[in-house]
Length: 258
Image 1 (cartoon, one colour):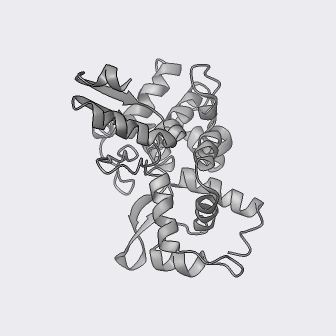
Image 2 (cartoon, helix red, strand yellow):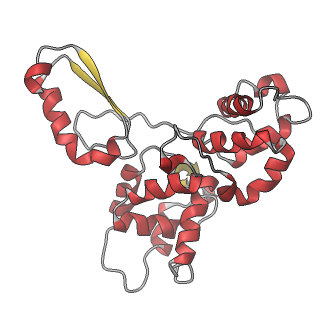
Image 3 (cartoon, rainbow, N blue to C red):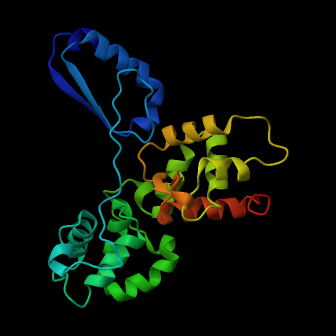
């Protein structure tokens, strides 16, 4: 492969690289051999290569709910635009109007602007008007499902997508992610250090573990930068994602300990 690529000028696109992180050195070797080769990689985890340039993909833009802009302005927000596209795919006559605009905006905000969540929720518009869909989103994990054969099985449910992502974490990072779920609205490093060290834990560098967790969840849908109390910088899991580790923490019997 190196000989074939040595004199080529092309872009090598690699998707879902988090599943084959062990091949990062092979990619590094290819890029070092072929000066005209560039690579675009999608991955939930950083490759940890010296020449790597990370471009995090944040959730889609949302309007503020305190003072919703006019309906025409709502159409300019990416989260609402994507929701409408998927809604019209299952209900061609669906349109954003003065009666449903507020509900649609709140649905998109409830789902944190996450594209897969918006797609799965919009599929329900075939049976549920936006007001009814919004009311049912309190139990949104069970509502966000699909049976589309052209979706990977891990994306048939929002819960499945989150579980698949969490399975990519190493055991220590998975345990830390579950413990951080006790925080609602975000956490600072100081708060994490105070809460996430439990009696009986082996010695570990919490700062290093948090850094590792951020690297393994580098797509930013799992841990977003956010101001916490006191105006300090911190992190928070979107509600759509954060509910899952919170449930897992309770199931594992760790919630009472934390």
